[in-house]
Image (cartoon, rainbow over all chains, first blue to last red; front, side, top):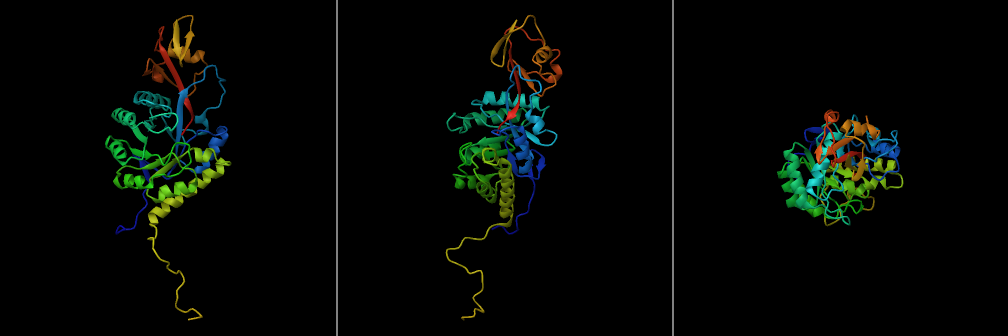
Length: 266
Length: 66
C-alpha cells in the first residue's frame, strides 16, 4: 500500500477533463429516442459514433444521430469500427474529422476478423502512428497484451483501451492479470473497451484502477437499457470510489467484526 | 459523365461540383463529410470542387456505433 491515500483526479484525455468515467456507445438501440435517454441516464460525457456511407435518396427529414446526441453537449468519439486495414481506419478518421468540424479525438480500432472482432494489432500500430503524426488524439482499442499497450502509448496514443473480452460478448474481464500489468505500466489513461456485460464487470475494472470503461452492448441489449445505463453509472462511480478508498487486505482466517470482550457468556 | 458514388455507378447529364451533387442528393445542410478519390474535400471547398468522370466519391454521416 502506498504511503499516501489515493486522491481523486478527474479523467483527462488529450488535455480535456471529464467528470464521468463511463463512456458509452450509440449502437444497437431501438431508436434515437432510446439512445438519447440511455446516454443521458449513463451520465456519460464521451459518446462513440460510427461513420458510414449516407443512404442515397433518403428522406431529407430522416432523424440524425447527432441531433439525439448533439456535439454541443457531448464529446463525440467517432470510431473506426468495421475497418480491417490501417489505411481504411485512417481514411475513416479523416472523414470523421471533416464531419465534426475539425474535432480530432478518435477511437481507433482495426479489426482482425468478423468472427472475433479481435484487434489486428499490426495494423492498429501502423494506423496509430499515422494518425498521431497527423494531429489526431487517438484513443485506441487493443488486445490485453501489455507490450502492445505500452507500444501504443509510446507512439503517442492519448488513451489505451484493452478489451475485457470479445466485443459484444458480455463476458466481462477474462484476463484481469494482464489488465493489472497494463495498469501498472501505464502513463496514459487505460480504459476497458469491449466485453463488459454487467455492472459488476464495470465496477471490477474501476476497482483495479482503470481510468474508465466504454460500454455499448451491455446497456443497449439490456431489457431496459435506460435503467441499465443508470446501473452502469453507479457501478463505475462505486468502482472508482473503491479504488480510491483501497480495499481491505484479504485474510486467510476469520476476523470478528464484533468484539469478544463483554460477551454475556464469557 | 459518371461517378462512383458510395460504391455505386451514377450517371449525370453534365459535369457538376461537389456542392451541386450534394444538392441533387438533397443532403445540403446535413452533417456529412465528402471524400473524392480518397481525399477529403472540406466543406469550404464543395462549391469550387468540380467532379470529373470516373471520380470515386464517398459521402458519409454519423450513425450509432460503439
